[in-house]
View 1: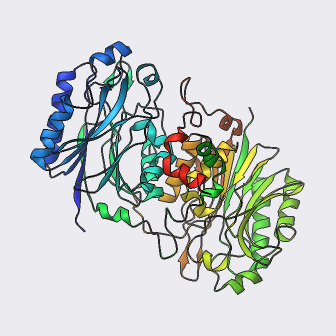
View 2 (view 1 turned 120 degrees about the vertical axis):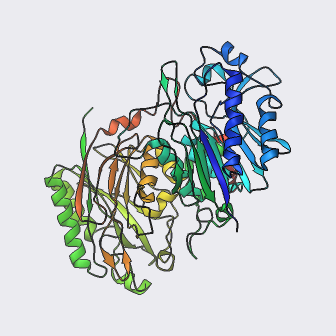
View 3 (view 1 turned 30 degrees about the vertical axis):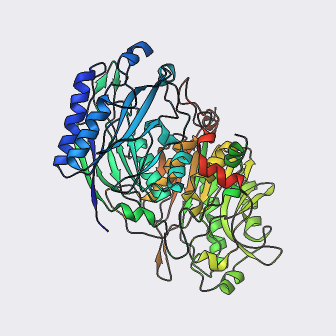
Length: 280
Length: 280
């Protein structure tokens, strides 16, 4: 079993500065690869910024699910023999906007995921995705992706684990909420819990900085498959989080000879969770 | 909205000492009520102890889902106008053993729940429960219950929230695992995450002490409906955890005017979680 270096490059995009953001993202991938990373995760909407004045403004910062920043990431991925996962503002072929994330490698765009659970004013700008998140078989292992508020839905991450993800990449823009300094932030607790519940690695790349009255938490971290943070950013500060991950460890879901985090599930007892699904 | 005092009495049962354990549990309820508690949670299997040598030994420490310790708890509940939730070793009418928890008030036993997800050697002793956990409408609010390893299954706690629980009581016996001292224990992370994901209060009463080569973590805590620990035990030490909880806050699932932790769910996208349920 060989370890792979996973990176989250916590940075501060600037809303509206498409050219500058793309350059910052490209440089971030190059920096991470130079530091040894084979998997590089960038924040949510890292090419556009987050706090749009309007849907119209977001539209001017959007791109299709090919070319543009994604082509730049693919070029960096090819040069570094790496996989890149990052968030961008997508305009679909039907003209609708999506808060999307791409999984890119040296061969190009492997998958684009459209955020399914939209947060607050995102609902005024974006159409929610109507497809489950992808799990992509990469040269490093099986990589799944969700975005930010998706992590408030444990069913969603469970589903990725049931579909074989070894690592879940989470491009994120966490706004700052009131918190209790003596306790780990809830955003960190959620990420660690998903790893723990599902025995998957999680690489959450948050942003930092300030936009139009919103401060961002900057709580990037990479967990192991047990739920421990292997490496974490200083809250709110730009930086490169690096962690060595033996991704194959996520294939063994056993706690011990009698327990397994997936096989021990009792779906017939998850009444309402099941009723929802049956009624779909 | 009025606050209610919720208590977890972390203690150390002694395996095999049925009489002593029952007296310790009774005294624990009385102590908590004297300290102002209206809801008292006791550990898993607090009348029998945990590390049985055999199913035969467990059988000698078991009782039906009525009378015995449960009658003592009901008497204390009546005297203190309280609700008690605690774990006990149950023998069913069919002779099978269960790792059970009871919700008891002054009127008697309101519900008995049989642990559905069994941990390690429990599988050699107990039959798993085949019913979902109850949500009981008490004088204080709607109280749900699960036991220990059940908290590794986020679908299970989600289900209690969907069925209206304001607070989930968690009688627990956490064995000690290797941990990273600078990070919150995974068992605490899981409890905080369930509160955060579901906007419910969680009162987890763990045990401490040592039995036949097993050390217990003693990580009792009471969270608010946002996922912050309101009060927590010193790890591994006997003690009374008390927290003021405005349980009605759990009825409001909104984050803001556009987000709601339950209404924002996208069950049609939880593919495998749904497939399991459809196949039951």
